[in-house]
Length: 193
Image 1 (tube, rainbow, N blue to C red):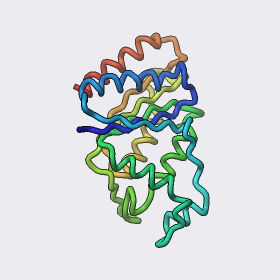
Image 2 (cartoon, helix red, strand yellow):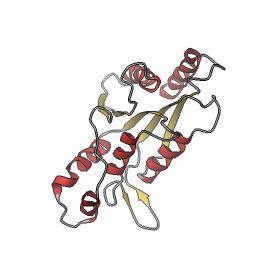
Image 3 (cartoon, rainbow, N blue to C red):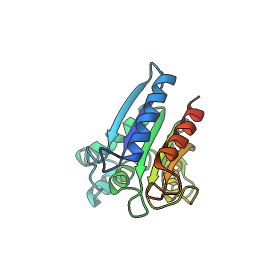
């Protein structure tokens, strides 16, 4: 039985391109995995605080203050318990939302999700990730900085099997948004079947 962890990061709870395509992904994933488990984390509704010096000290301590890393441990545990991860992510000011950055700052931890100092080894192997991204002003087919950033973060933790479903140019009229969504829906079907 597969477990999917869905992580949403759009500030929009309605009329969000990334969430809408994420909903479609979930519908299709349920068809393929009728007994599967879906866990959800919305980093805009369940805010994850930015890490502090106290948190970083606890990350590296032999006897950490467990209160300051409790949430980090919970988030990492979610990652270990899932087989697949779906990230829905809009681009804000040419990057991922700060709430999603705070999430990754909390889960990328030495001896928990990676080991080594010079030669790094990710510990979350044998997991598959899906990235649904949306960008307003970038035309379809252009370089996607969100994919690069999220790929580096996933790879650091050992996740290298990644599928991308970009919705580029949601404010550009070259192709209608309905056509862009339909194109990515067909890509999702290809990857899930």
